[in-house]
Image (cartoon, rainbow, N blue to C red; front, side):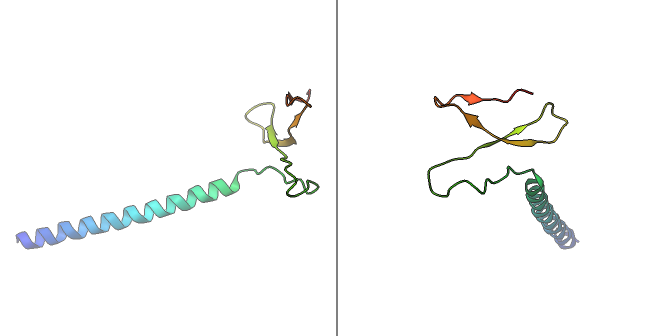
Length: 86
């Protein structure tokens, strides 16, 4: 009788481990899908490649409920960030 209980307990632990593995893998898949769905900054096709030029884009939105409007980040000759007036 004790062997049957031990056998059942072992099968339960194995089944629980398999369920946890499947949940872990599925949650990783969900995270990857969510990251892929995030809005990406646009790529500037006119930017020269390999010239040491870095084009940065920033998310501009008046409040947190609106989607991002990607705008190029501009700096002056001293490196100060320039912002556009709304």
